[in-house]
Length: 292
Ligand code: SF4
Image (cartoon, rainbow, N blue to C red; front, side, top):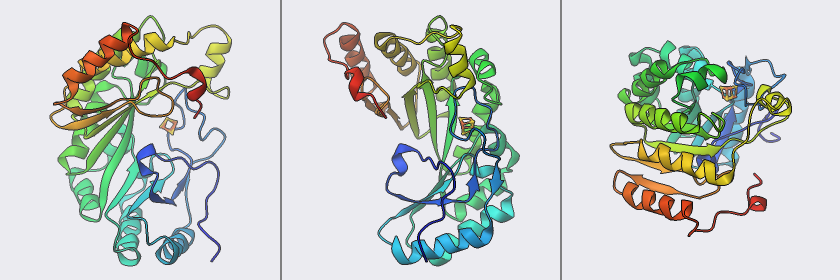
């Protein structure tokens, strides 16, 4: 065997850096978000089961030092239940030491599954779902063509939690532009509070040239925000986010102020840090360190 079979660009959440990346779909079933260029030009499809099977056997022989599996690409949860069941069972058979399987899901794919189906996936090893919320502001969600409004996002997030699966939600700083920044921050905090995820990852928007948003920037229709404005947005979002228990992370390479807040205990201290940073008393990451 000659290694894992990867096609196209394979991405994974930062927290899955030490996972076996098993690519079971190619592309993203939605593929319409205005800021995303990851799978442009890629037609979404399920990979052949023989290839998946060969990759699981390869991982069994060569990657037994890794404890987690991440199923790529975008939105693997859209797979029909029998296919997902088969994949999770194959992982259990050949990689019995695996402690957690993770994947990306969007609101549509989550809501297409019944509670029983999600619980079944949980019992077969699915331990975490990564959901891209980006914003809780209905206007922003429409503008970026996310494919779901705030209510559906909340319902989807709650479904995952109710099935006993961990939920990690990504939000985007700067996605609303300058004028709507604080509205976006508050609405996003409110939606996060309603979902009550285990993890929140706040990333800073990076403009990619091959996207609709990239074109808007070129035409002067979308304004990029300054580091201090992004920081104020992040602070406002955190202020409006109430989690019963979880981690709020803004430590991705694209963020200016690395932050890891254990909620709810660490929130006040973090907000105080924001006030200091906004007052210019904490150094921000210089621009050249920001490259991904
Ligand atoms: S759902 Fe995710 S991968 Fe798909 S287009 Fe949107 S941001 Fe990109």
